[in-house]
Each structure stands twice: as C-alpha cells, then as structure tokens.
Image (cartoon, rainbow, N blue to C red; front, side):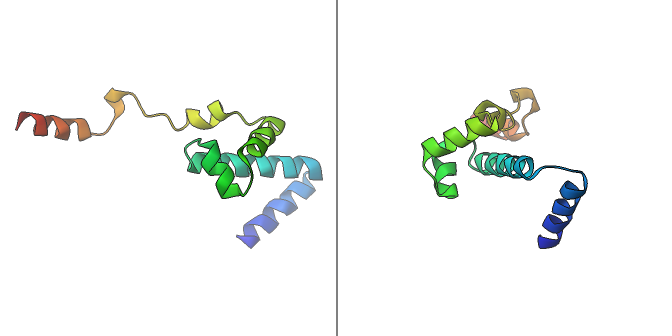
Length: 95
C-alpha cells in the first residue's frame, strides 16, 4: 500500500496538483468510503472515524459530499432485477 501511495503522490506532484486540493480530495474519498461501508449511517461512520456526528456533517458540507450521493449507490435494485431468492421464497409458500 505504501508503494501505491508513493506512486499516487508522485503523480499528483508531477501533474501540478496543489497540496490543499490533494488533501481535500483525499478527505472526500476517505469519508465517502467510510460512509459507504456504514451504508450511509452518519452516526456509525462518525464513531468509526473517531469524531462527532456534527463534525462529520460539517466536513461533508465543506467537501461537497452529499449523503444522497453516497446512498444512491446503496439502493436495492428493482424487484425484477433481484436474484432468484423470490422464486425460492415462493416455493416455501406453496409447500
């Protein structure tokens, strides 16, 4: 992982990305990942991050990170696109 980070930092530096922009993007991606891992639950994400929920909300606002954006990728697919579990469940109802 250290090698990947070193490579990323080298690429960012050589392409002229400013330090502030690099830190902002890192924070945004890190918070987004933690929120996705906690299915958009801010309380659980804040606890994992070691901060208060209000602080997390403020950081999200400062970074332009929307909870609806995070939750959009977590929605269940429409019923017609779900796995065959519904057919199995129907078998139990009939038998």
